[in-house]
Image 1 (cartoon, rainbow, N blue to C red):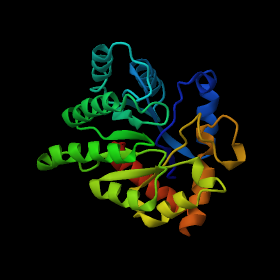
Image 2: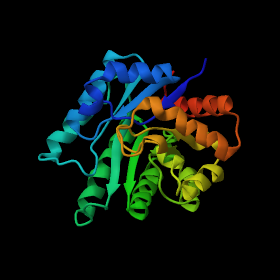
Image 3: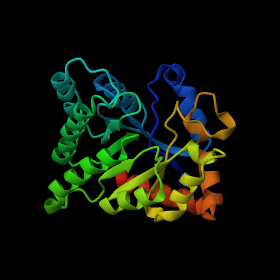
Image 4: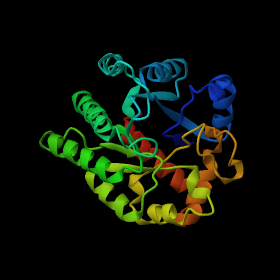
Length: 264
């Protein structure tokens, strides 16, 4: 039976990791087939990979988040790059731009992003992109990257804009570049009209689902810790929004995720 793939969950955070066996068991009991665990710096990237080595259904992404407090960037990038050849590393991420907390270092964030996008080119891996209040600059960065690799055609699946929060016009521009859109618990919120329009406005083969656990829980658990076992709530809502049979929707998002991350 085809299961749901959680394309973005941070299982190494203490409030999940301290009971990770139970967290994974609950998820599997609720129909989760596989998990992609992205790091936010070299240390958590290694932790994500260690989890992937422990559990057959876990895959790792490695990268440096724009909000990570990196003391030695050169060393941090080297440590991340050393993980990229591992067979269970399926993407570079979580990377991107975040101007919500600090826009004064925008140029530094962009430089870090471009360095990691080049690593994605070298290792032929998709990217998991974080965006907060930075969509125009982020789009410009990935457009430059896409233009630089276009002749090789090595990146048919460029990656995913995770926890998508922009409108449908941005979503359409992003999928035209070759990216998928990641949708999670926020689509269940009462004020989620914009995100619901995004889901309805893009081809279903560009849609993947995620929890971003332990963050952004679906409506019934708002204010509490999120975990992958709650992902079926997202599928239930998507099924209603798209007027799509739930079983078919699971099969399609499962296939999308496997193609995106090269998961067998």
